[in-house]
Image (cartoon, rainbow, N blue to C red; front, side, top):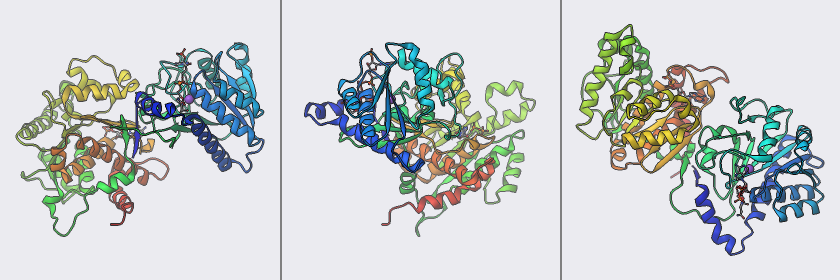
Length: 532
Ligand SMILES: NC(=O)C1=CN([C@@H]2O[C@H](COP(=O)(O)OP(=O)(O)OC[C@H]3O[C@@H](n4cnc5c(N)ncnc54)[C@H](OP(=O)(O)O)[C@@H]3O)[C@@H](O)[C@H]2O)[C@@H](O)CC1
Ligand SMILES: Nc1ncnc2c1ncn2[C@@H]1O[C@H](COP(=O)(O)OP(=O)(O)O)[C@@H](O)[C@H]1O
Ligand SMILES: [K+]
């Protein structure tokens, strides 16, 4: 698991060590330089003579970068430090100069920004040490000008102005390797926002612990590979954001034993699909069955049930015991009924979902509320109800609770709005996207396990089925522990993402391919379990 702590928590952990004279910056800079050398060796034969540009801002982040530049200069690399503030870290600057590094002072002469662009174009490595956890708001001043100019010149990143499109995820050849010092300069360190210009890193070397913004979208798309360097900090208390690793999911997976049977393994009830969208029911039931549910019970209209049974003969359509519900995939949202050419059929699907949901309130049964099921959440929910909206659906959930946001707002600040939806509904909320954000009581997860090929129709229905089966397998524990539904939801996003990875040939996948890849994915995961 990657655990991320806020800037305030990291500073609090640094304080006693700095007071005791522990050389934190030296440790950070040495680890940074070592990582750069390893990356260079992995990309070329010799590091001697390699060109490095250090972008140095005013604070200790620039200090880290300058000290690392000094290490690299001593190893025979040609280092140029771009001084993007009138005053930079004294010790770092002195060390760099003593080691033979060159400096370009852009803060006192904005005309030199062009020469920086030229230096960077010929560099093998760029160290981004403009700002770190001391950043506040969009990257401003000379540092902001430098990043904007580099992005305009073709380096991947966000220009942070009106022309700003999404980050470029293009190939890494033919341009310098960008290493962010602690964080890519200018991201929202605690919330993952991208308020202004940011250079996209190929690697982020982060000190003491990961920071929330490295895991959260949209900033998570700008960090590259994350290397966490242990500089001896003791971070107490709960992390602000977590990201599960495959090993975590493997360790918690309920492997059946001799005493198990279909009811102990968990029965998933599915209310999904309408005559207009019967496929959603097939996908959700298939995914639930393939994730290892003891039984899948389909409770919807006869016409959809026929399609489900044709695809999955093991599904049961009779009423009975259920340990988790999946309500809503392929069921149109209530507000859209009037526009739906299939109004009556849409209403029938909704009515079935509403009926099952009313039954839910009678007992503590975990539930996944997806698509049309989201519209049925009017009162407060327990945390073992998991809402699974995408950004547009989250907007609708929030509006229903009187919060006027647009989809673009949700995309710009996913953590903020997912948390708001959790606070307003009481439910655990899983926001779907390239990075999936989950907020439950006192916990936040951010999972980035899926190839972008997963963004295809029906993929969300598959996630709902996977999550339903995982909740059914641990239903009693999920009801007993308010934060567990969020962990299970994050684990479901991981399984979903890895199944897509397994299913893609490096090209398109279909939702059914992803569901079909789940058994092999789970089997692979289980090989990661530590031997007893
Ligand atoms: N303490 C230690 O020994 C250790 C610290 N460590 C390292 O220190 C980093 C934190 O250093 P830090 O606290 O000095 O803050 P830092 O991120 O460099 O930025 C502050 C400067 O930036 C400026 N600035 C602010 N916002 C801005 C913006 N939007 N756009 C432009 N400029 C902006 C701000 O200016 P001001 O607002 O004061 O005018 C100020 O001058 C941390 O990330 C890690 O790398 C590690 O080495 C471990 C040991
Ligand atoms: N760019 C992307 N990279 C990785 N995963 C993605 C991307 N876009 C979407 N996804 C995932 O694909 C699924 C799409 O779900 P959803 O939008 O509900 O589609 P549908 O309603 O058609 O099933 C979600 O699990 C989401 O996290
Ligand atoms: K930085």
